[in-house]
Length: 301
Image 1 (spheres, rainbow, N blue to C red):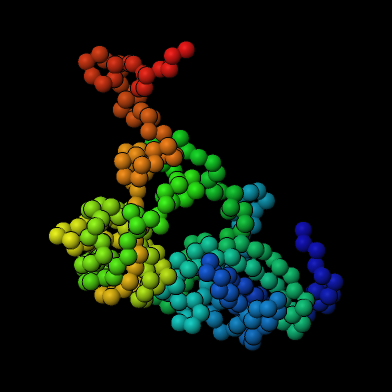
Image 2 (cartoon, helix red, strand yellow):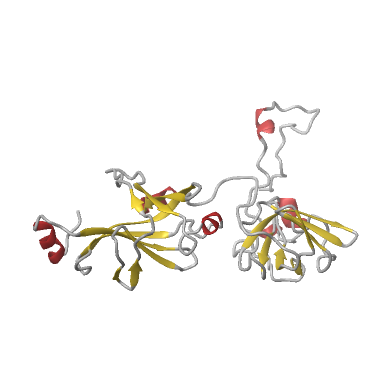
């Protein structure tokens, strides 16, 4: 149960109230926005909450158990605030949200009603609907490791240990020409890397419309010194000839790749000796690979 500030409680007790909802949103890049359903700007706690944004909220769905509470916020797409491009670019993914109830005649009389993060965003032609999830959704995140065949580390992180800043695993160049919206040709700078070296890697854009953004690589081919890079998804902003980028090697999470390409088998974070489903369901047979013997020699003693 919330304890209301004395001044705010006194205002509610008067019967006739002057209340407004305010939303404070902080994107993952640190940019802060304030919105209100009032008809003029309200300012408090270092944030200006702007009207005329088309913001409107649904009822708050709250349950007594640990299921995730949620509220929908409807707003118009505005070029100077929440743009369709920023939404598609992922800048609003998991943005933090504070929902305040404020006496607009005396903004010092206010109470924080809920704190959460942006969940699903549904876009229409001229508007969007954003789901505001309560902090309980963090309890749904997987914790710990999974017993699996493939490595569960991220290439280059502390558990992996591969140095991605090395010239062996990183290249820089610029786009020579584009093919469609997610494939481009690189004539110089990547000729020393064999085909497939950057499969499942990452492109970091250094210039152009996508500067500062990252994209995952689907495939990398090399023919006569000319590289062709295909991204997993088309960037929200178009790729153009001359766009500079850095690209890092990728990993398919297999033990053989970790051992042969990176020489990093000791840090492999999977379990390559797990038998497959077909091996588990088959009967031992001396005439094939499943003889019933141990997959690896047993240690003496």
